[in-house]
Figure (spheres, rainbow, N blue to C red):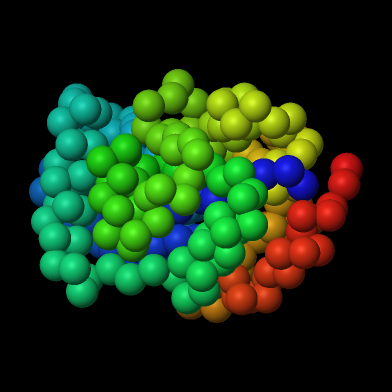
Length: 220
């Protein structure tokens, strides 16, 4: 592999539980019921994809832009406390190791750009990435491969020569559809979330289990 592309939520930032909490709160404010179980199939997908489906099911005339903006506001309020969100164990060291080896790095997240940049700067890794892509700015959400195809293009490297590190079924599917080599991080805290990442080339229970030397010599 010539480059590595990271997902963010659940891979770099331990934020999945907060996304669920703020999605549920937002829907309640608009009179739509939602449970944690209802949110699980949307791991790795954009807020627009999530709320679009719920608005349709509720046959509601709620503005999609309005409800998405409200969710982002609640999320930012929650994480304003620096102690509210932490990096995934092993993520920062892994990123810096790749960077020190001069491996081209990219981030391809379904989150909005301001959240992406805030976390990368907060964790001191913003300058490690050559390309930063926000799925919220694209037409299609994961599991569509658009974000990974565009990220590889911006890196100037063939998708088949890029390794993707993902934690969600939608993200793994997107990476494989794009032709990437894919490592699935199976976070032990989310084993009940029904994420089928069997399509990944490798599965690890900890980011510390990723063998960088072995990953870089992988060939398709």
